[in-house]
Length: 275
Image (cartoon, rainbow, N blue to C red; front, side, top):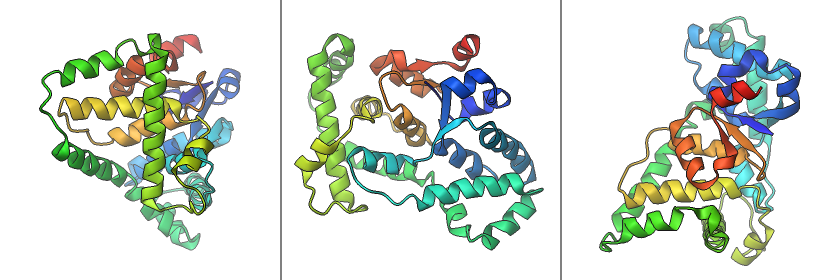
């Protein structure tokens, strides 16, 4: 299956209802979040309403779990879906509204203000990601002269070294399990680190490997993440199995996937020729 992230949805929105797209493609609520979050006036309302309308009316498959929800579910934890459901309703309200002003007027009447405000600050997750990166950089030991060379060697030809790839994946699974316990956002009562790791369903393997390489590269070579990098990377959470392929023209996603999972990436042009 081919996963269409936000920009690919914009490119191919007029073809979403065709048999090929309905049978072979899917998108996510993250794409809807980004489309809704960019509505700031009448012009952006009309442009994005049309794209959201095509997503909804085409009935293309959509994964409606937010990235955070996908992380918790991957470790067998129960998560309330009310936020996702309300964002879906916001998309429907956008489609039903005749103008930006009507859309803004209808949001509080449908008790969706909280979720509209949530979308407007959703990209703050990138700010938190940058802050976390900065803290790691400040405490990182840069004294090893072979650090960059060893890092590149570790990640080069990873598919030809399954034992190393498995070791890296295990470290990443443990890291994210620890982060869940540290966050204390969802109920993990009765589940320690061992239980969480054992409960992991491997649906985020591609994302984990990619975020591991991405953050490692930024840290080792002292390159600060750009705006929206984390949200762009979050689209990789929707590659739920080894056969999933993301369709994207994002250079950062392309560079990371070609390093870690080259078979899971297609550019929009390549996909256009295929479809």
